[in-house]
Image 1 (cartoon, rainbow, N blue to C red):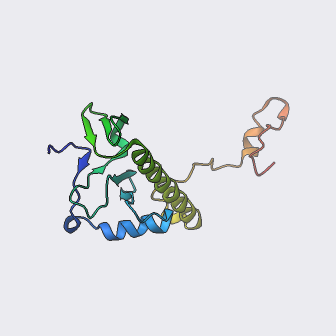
Image 2: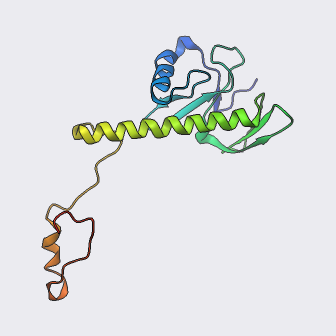
Image 3: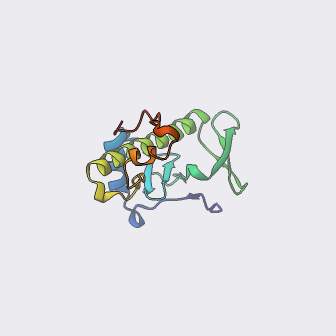
Length: 158
């Protein structure tokens, strides 16, 4: 089988799979065919087509998927962003479920990181803080004609 840049067979000896599976279980409760985080900084996620322990397991990087559709009863044809196509032995319903699980993992991980970073601002590694003006917004209101107050409902100083 030819290797496509977006697919690879994962060997447990070369990848810390156990810890990543535990992380997925903790975040979204999935234990069977769990998606995993490869690199949280670049939002690289991957999901298996069958049980990771199976020699038939193919890992798919969803960020490289351009399109996919069912072919036959239990097969899905994936078109990647480089226009390569690959047929997998997986129903469209199962494929959609894996996509949804991966999206859920991404969302839950992002929520946890935002929560941690709001509690510990010095750890802003994944979500840099929004920039604020050094001066209070009232300073800028002196520049308005007739010293009218700006109508900004999000300004905490008004």
